[in-house]
Length: 325
Image 1 (cartoon, rainbow, N blue to C red):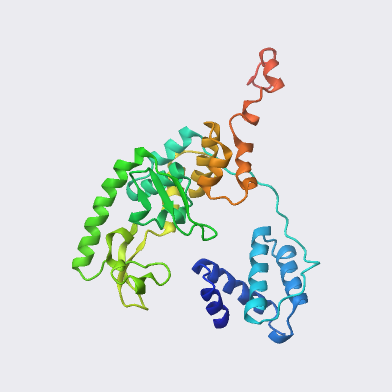
Image 2: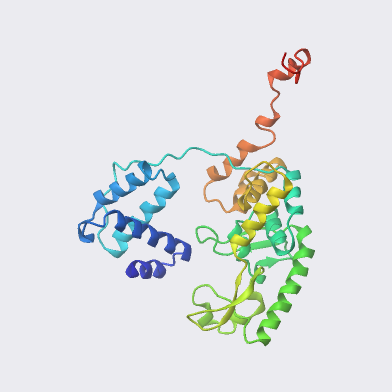
């Protein structure tokens, strides 16, 4: 397990991917606890993956993640690449349409949020960001002059540029004034450091306290990093925003299972409804495959909702809503 963690780290996998892959290795070893690791090969992987689909009823994406973790382990850690994994019972992957809010529903939810959490939600809807992309924004990633948000190391470790709505310039600038005062107070107390990607803290030793590298949405508490012994602020935790979003949806009375990611779905759908080119939307969302973006064409207002049902021509002579006799 230690070798696998080291190998994943050396190949620059994200901390979340490392955690997920190690978790799948633990489950795989627990599944074959009575067998020696050296005897486990492709057949053992097939039986584990099939059990996930048949007995565990996991989704196709979950099964694929487990498969990737085990293929990585045997290829890069054990140095015993697996034979083709044929005969694995695949988990079903039904096509699901995304939940999309109307503009009025978006307004209702945003109205129920306050402070930094409201600004985060506005960026999710106004810029099409994923939740963690918004929370890990640094001060230097907001380009007010060009009305752009620079997303660093997004999904797939890719950078991209998306829109920064002008209506957010004033609220974000005022928010950054408060964040800068907090950062300056932290510096006076011997804190004010921030985690940097890769080995930048060794290359640019002063960057850990530099204003431009600070989180746009810092956490409320300071922690002490075990490795560097620095007193740092983490960015706002995603569960705090998710909880606030869940409560806002309940207070707004919307009868939809809306989450933080629903704002991203709504951003894409509303852009297409406004006539934006689908290739442009693909670039703003950071999708590698156009087919991923095409899913939003199935939930446009000019889709099923724009069709006139044949029932409409019969309504006048039926008498809707009469009490049964």
